[in-house]
Length: 80
Image 1: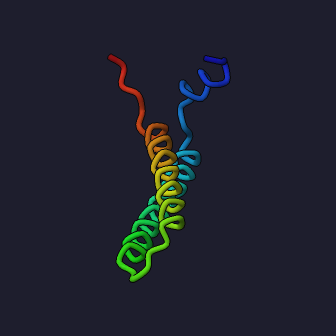
Image 2: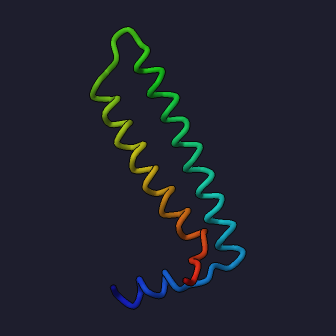
């Protein structure tokens, strides 16, 4: 692990950083839910576009990964 990565892990977030990350997290969650709604609508259509559905599912997974990364930055590590 590089020094830069260690600094990111050990860096205590300021209130402003926490607020920005929380706002970004909210935006990603909304986009994730929007994609879920679109996917349900496409699946229920008479002729679903499977290629579009696959692309949207991949995008949704990338969003989920981004959400998990942000959540892990916002939750402080507990010393054992």
